[in-house]
Image (tube, rainbow, N blue to C red; front, side, top):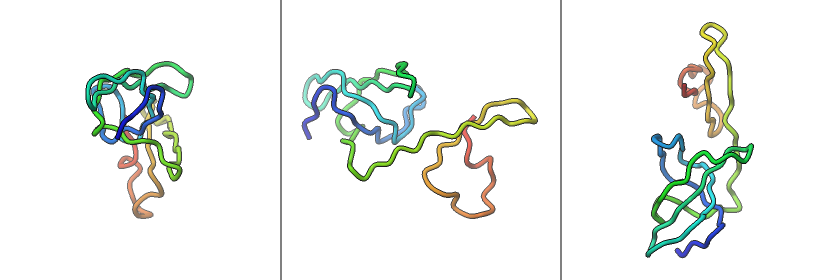
Length: 104
């Protein structure tokens, strides 16, 4: 598929070295040779989180069925640590441990 500058895309894989996860939205800021893209990912505040060189296999176009689900931030009262949950739907089972839902 031919992507265009400023097109919104969905990341298809985690890029933990950049703090990005599959499903994050980005905007194509530059297209290079065949299948090569530069994509900017921003926080809700508008601050740039990362600008990454990717290939067309790493992203897909946004689809009308895509739904935005922001991460949930919870403060662990015992440790004071901030925990971030990326829920992609309801827990798999009612007894699922909360620790399985959160990234530190």
